[in-house]
Length: 183
Image 1: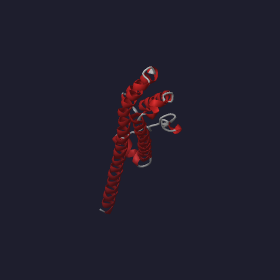
Image 2 (image 1 turned 90 degrees about the vertical axis):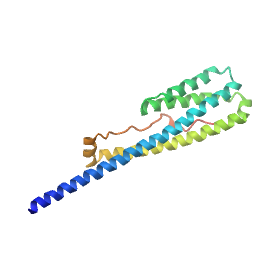
Image 3 (image 1 turned 90 degrees about the horizontal axis):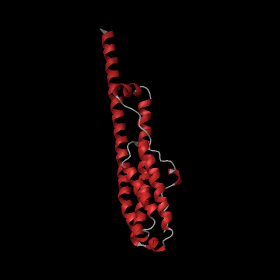
């Protein structure tokens, strides 16, 4: 009888451990999903600012068609990117295109003095900062989640219940800083 009670207690403890581990993994997975949603919000904000910026530049520098088209193409690719890696690559291309656009702007003093353009530049700079923070928060959440599903005994629960590791959002050249905005 005592052996049966001990065995029952062990089963209950194991079952509770599995439930606690599973619930912890769900919380971390939801945190990663929420963090990704915050990255997405900031990227959408960036994508929404770009057409206004391009339109303002186009009014002053219409013959700089190559730089304007490069930004439009890069924006479209970023908006249609599939996974984390593809989005990171598209974001790198968009940042490069924006840097090219700002290099063109340097040749137009009237444009650099335009109040609407200055405001758009500031909004873009603020959005770049917010995006960097959201990306950092996402990557921290992914680290916590991946650690949780990779450590014993949660790795057993994760493997049997379908939890898979997530990719970090790495943008090559992101350490170089955001798009340079000069006034």
